[in-house]
Each structure stands twice: as structure tokens, then as C-alpha cells.
Image 1 (spheres, one colour):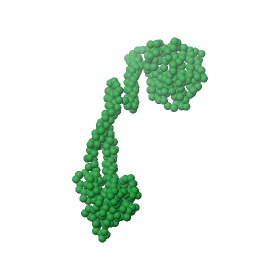
Image 2 (cartoon, one colour):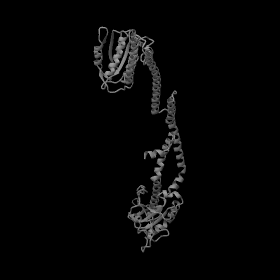
Image 3 (cartoon, one colour):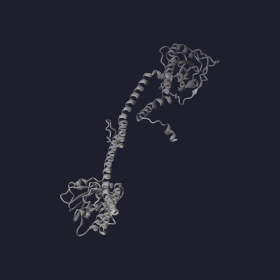
Amino acid sequence: MKRFAAALWPVMRLRTIMFALLLLVAALPGVAAIGLRVYENALVRRTEAELIAQGSALAASAALGFRAGGAPARAGASADPSDLDDRAISTSIDLRSSPVLGERPDAVPTPLRPDPAAVAMAKAWAPVVDQTKQATLASILLLDSQGIVLNGRDAGRSLAALPEVRAALAGRPITTLRHNGSYMHPYPLEWISRATDIRLHHARPIIAGGRVVGVVLASRSPRALFRGMYEDRGKIAAGTAAIFLFLVMMTALLGRTIVRPIEALSLATRALAEGRKADPPQPTLRVHEIDSLIRDFATMASAIEARSHYLRDFAAALAHEFKTPLAGLTGGIELLQDHGATMSVEERALFLANMAEDTQRLSRLISRLLDLAKADMQRPGDAACDLRDVVVRLADGLGSPDFRVIFNESDVTAPVAMDGAALETVLMILFDNAKAAGASEVSLGGKRIAGSLELIIADNGSGIAPSDRARIFEPFFTSKRAQGGTGLGLPIARALVTGHGGQLELVDCPQGAKFRLALGFSRGESRTTTLVGI
């Protein structure tokens, strides 16, 4: 399924996806409004409110046509306040839950005679009803207390069987939804609207003297959804244009803050892959995450460039280091092959000794290279050791009348975040270099600074030449090649320390050599490795 979807999914630009997503989000309210018929429901409720207002006004006016005893009221007479329905207009129709009844049946003949007082009232208020019908386009019928129609073509016939009329005669105003069989669909898309073929019927009691004396039955079709949208087309068009303009602005903003930097990073990545200089982008509109991505890319590019230079220089130095002993071995083998039979025993022994020495040098180089590779792959972990134990063990092992290690035990008792064997290797390299430089003693002191343990390892040997100090951590650089030096000791030491989250560097001093070693504390102690000068 995933492969099928992946095969059909088109590869699009990020700008297109963002714009489509924003457009979809912007269209959701409109889709929801039409899909849930929110707007249509509002139109129906507005129609219901208008019917209720018309029915209330007509019922209150018609109540003036009755006396408490049923006779017509005098002109100018006011209705009893208790006769008027003073409840606020409250709609009850909801297209999602209100039932839609069948089309309203025609009035049926009845043997009952209408109330004379109601007939007089209907005749008196006929002009008002006619004008209201013309203004509102609503159908308005006046019924007496028996449900008999008092006006219109059905006058004298009965609608008492209708549920809404029965409710009104019981003193309860009600609005119902009924199908409108006479409505024609002029628009092809009107099937989407539920309210196109319905009609609202509102029945309201006429109350006079504390009793129901008649009913106002008003009916009207709600405004069609499409007609309402057409009437509000200006507002809808303006809102749509505003939303579209906002989407374009947001897409442009996101394009400048996200898409352009990513495209620039893509170009820089290609340049980096082709070996060219990769300049990370500098966007004008900055975003925190994009800034972080650009910084990480710049760090990666610098690391790759530095590693590339390192590998190139390392390969050149490695070739040089292997070339000398291999040349010696090759030359010795050729001499023995060509002149071995004519050589004396002493000459053969000399050549074999030189070849053995070259072989041992190659063996040392390979061993040191393996140690350097392991040190370069070292990463900070949960390793820990007691610094005092390591120093004491090395001091005891190296101590002699010609060389000693001096240290203050109280300063180096904290457990540090470094493997014991790795720390012993680092200190052994520094002590061996001191002995090779003719030092008779090495002092080691430590103290806590800013959550780290800083060690100073100083010797009284011949020191390091100023011209060599910048290169002592370069692989294969050594001033004692004739004595068998490989130039890999200090690079291995620094790689081990760096791999455990520490730092190792040379410190200027007037005599001998001095190194600063900063190590973080083990878990439970601060792991900060910030260096502070002494």
C-alpha cells in the first residue's frame, strides 16, 4: 500500500505544498459552513424570527378587536397588559434536528359557524393583514377559537386538525417545518440546500381577557441559500480576496524564511559534495530553527573541510613515513640478492640489522596508527577513574634515581570522566616525552575550576623549540626521528582526551615543557570542561 501510494504521489515543490495547505485551512470554515448548513440554518432562523415578530404584532393588534366579554372594543381602547404575550422572540427551528412535516393540507368544510366577534375583528383588521402580506410575502390566516378560517379563499372552512393550530388554541405558540410542494427548482445546484423546498408555519394564539379567542397562522418560505449568498456576494468576494491575499503573503513569508534557505542549503551541499567551498546562506528573514540548521551546516562544512585537510596531510605524511623504511628494506633485499654471495659475514649482518630496524619502525608505526584510530573514534561516555590511583601507579612504575614524579595528592583525588587505561596512556606519553627531553622530574598539580579538574604537567627538561610548538600535535611530526620517534604520541594523547570531553594543550613556560589537561568530573560531579588560565 505504501509503495502504491508512493508511486502515485507527485513530487511537488515545498512552496506548492505550503500554499495548498494554507488554502485548505482557509477554506475549511467555508466548507464547514456549507456542509453543516450553518449559514442556511441562520437564514431559516431569521425567517422564523420574522414570522414570530409578525405573528406577535398581528395577535396583539387583533386582541384589541375583542372586549373581555367578546364584543368589539371601542376605537382607542387599550388591551389589558395581561392579554399581551411579552415573551422575547426565541427561535426553535434547527434544520439538523427539527422534523419536516408533509405539505399543509387544505382547510376542510365544517358544520360549525365562526365566532361573530372574531368575524368582526377579521373584517376590521383585513386591510392591515393585506398590507402585511404584500410587504412580507407571507401567507397570513386569521382563525377563531374553533380553528375556523376567517379570511382568504378558505374562509368558513376549518384547520383545527393541524398540530400547530391545536397547539396555538391551547395557548402555546409554535413553529413547524413543512414541505412546499409548489416550489420549483430554478437552480441546478439547489439539491445541496435542504431548505429550498420547505416552508415555515407559525401559529400564534390571540389572547384577550385571559382566554384564547383566535389564532394567527403565518407561513413563509425561508430565503434560499444561494439567493442569500448572491445577495451577500460583495461581502463574500471581499472576504475571499482578503483571504487569498493573506495566503499569498503568508506563502511569500514562509518562502523567504523556510524555502529559500533550504534551497540555498541544497546548493551549498552540492558544492560541498563536489569539493568546492560551501557558503551557508544568510537569510534576511530569520527563523530560529532555520538559523540552527544553518549553524549546524556551517559546523559540518568546517568539520568536513578540516577533516579533508587532515586526511590529505595525514596521507602525505603516512606515505613519507612508510616510504623511508620501505626504501631501506627494498635496497637491502636487492643488495643481498645481487651481492649476497660475495659479501662477508659482517656485511650481511649489518644489512640484516638495518632491515630489522626498518621492520621494527614499520611495526611501531602500524601499532601507533592503530592506537590513533582507536583514540579518534573515542566518544564521551560514562567511563570514570580515580585520578590519584592512576598517578600513584605511574609514579611508582617510573620512579628512579634519575626520574621522579612529584604531585600533591590532595589536589588529584576527584574521580574524573575518563577511562583509567586511556588516562594512563595520556600521562605515560607526557612522562615519556619528558624523559626523552632529559627531564629529571615532572610535577603534577591540579585544582577545581568552574566545575572541571585542571591538571598542569610540567617538566624540567630541554623543552620544545619555539618553531616546533605549533606542530607538536600534528601526526608524524617529531624532532627525534633518529631515536625512533614516530610523531604520533601527542596526537594520540590529545585524541584520547578530546574523545572523553576534555582538552589538552601546550602552555608557554620559560623552562622545560608544560601541558594543561582539563577533564570533566564523573557522573555526580560537574561535567564542564571550561579552561581557565593559571
